[in-house]
Image (cartoon, rainbow, N blue to C red; front, side, top):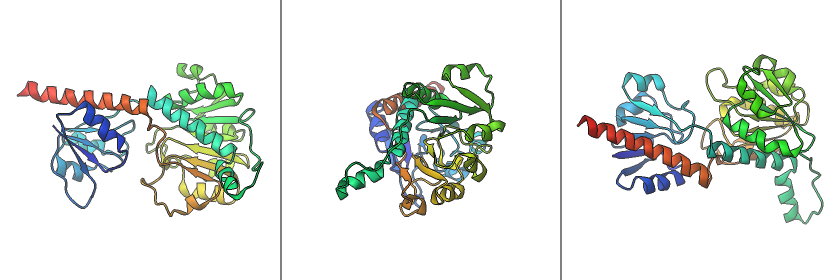
Length: 308
């Protein structure tokens, strides 16, 4: 069984899969301009997998390491009879992303980058931070990660509101929200929001959903946190809202292009905190993902053996 990782990002994934599938041949395709050998399983790792890539590698399975399949041309895979799979975002992965979102919220409120600079400069007792208690946090998208985050935020005495397609859906009750709004009422929710956490899936409907209009609906001095997908937020609208000071800050773990160019102007803004797509990269999250991916690959091998 030959497994091809597309790119050398998220290095822990390869080690964990090697431990679970010691008999497999695991390769890394790093250079898009150099054709890789054919393989049985293709693991995208932030590569765009289109029909041309499928025709080069001819995999039997495209297995996402984690949730979300927006980087795979599903129609092309269907035409070629290639199976496509992902890992549910629930469980330890959702918990890990939620924990990271809490970290980013606190880092914004306490101006962590400036606090670190002040240590180096010998400045004591500054900057003046904000408490999480008493703020209104809006969860835009009520999936597994948002549920895990809501459970963690309730003890902080913050007001929790949500935006979703159907506020009357049975699952919404489990969030314990103070208020919930339909997607077409998003402006009402945003106008009372201190911290907006984006927790949506990326598709044609949600791409650039957090645009200039949405950001303008937030009160001056609000914050934005995105641990979902970069393209959910309009880049130019975000840059404008941050550079003009309408937003007090943004914390991003995901980007419009990944790896994100280190010289991008957005990263030079003093009110931006950025981490390198690590929200779900924890011991327990990755162990669970590796178990699921390995089991799926073993099923592929068993199916092949039965046909033979």
